[in-house]
Amino acid sequence: MAKFLRDQNLKNITVTEQMLDLINEFLEERELSTNEELTATGANDDEKLLLNYIIRFDNRGYKLVDYADVKKYYSQATEVERMLFTLDSTESVKTNRLYGTFFEIRLDSRDPKNTFIQVSSDDGDAVDSVFCGLIDIVTKFSNHNGKVRNTWSQLLVQVLGVAAGFTLSLIAGLKVAPFVKFENSFVITFIFSFLIFSNAWGFINQQILRYIDYAFPNIKFSRQGKSTLHWLSQALVGGIVVAFTLLLISSAFDWIGKVLSEYIGT
Image 1 (cartoon, rainbow, N blue to C red):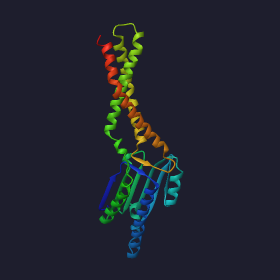
Image 2: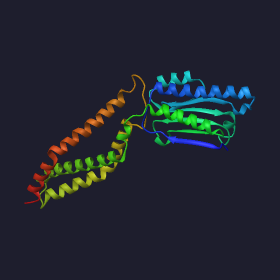
Image 3: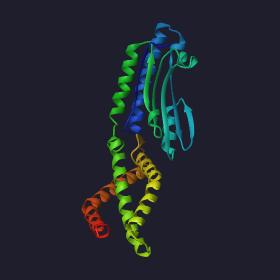
Image 4: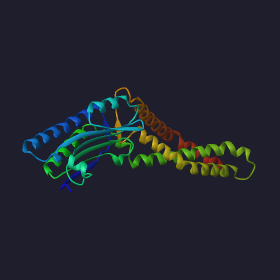
């Protein structure tokens, strides 16, 4: 088993063609220099490295050894789902990574847990240099999606959603109560409306959070001329949150106070 291992999950990265080119150049240089050194010293061929790629897009995937093919599929894809750069030794491939050297970076737009850098080798210096080199490249392309993808955003969605449900239930109570001929009709219709909202809110909340994850992904594959939809989604989410928050602050509490004092205080 290889003696040294380093890994790290990647968060809030915008993947561009420039970033992919830098990663490829870095790993190609490592592949070339290592293999030249092994050839010069007459080392076992099982220690030589081979760079390969996996790209998954539009519900299909390819394992490739030519970076030009990767660039072609990347530019043609409607939606890129996942990309892998792997620099493996023959020994690592034969032993399913139990022994030998491998350097890998995974970029997955759908599963944040499947996005990481992992390097392993018997050479500690090689592990540190490759790991740090890949981290240096990736961090240059960090984005600010983490400001939205957090527990505070989930809390904000919950608070705004409950406030909206409460307000809509009050409106429903106002509209329906005049047609219901029994005592405390407003209170009963309000409670009934709010119960309906409460049962529906779990599903609605999940869909809102899913849409936020789509608009502000952990890994965003940005391609020229094909990123408009994400910008529109982000603008839509931001616009809705700002507008709804301002609406609540400016009028909700005054209006609710008047309604409650008129219908419940009497």
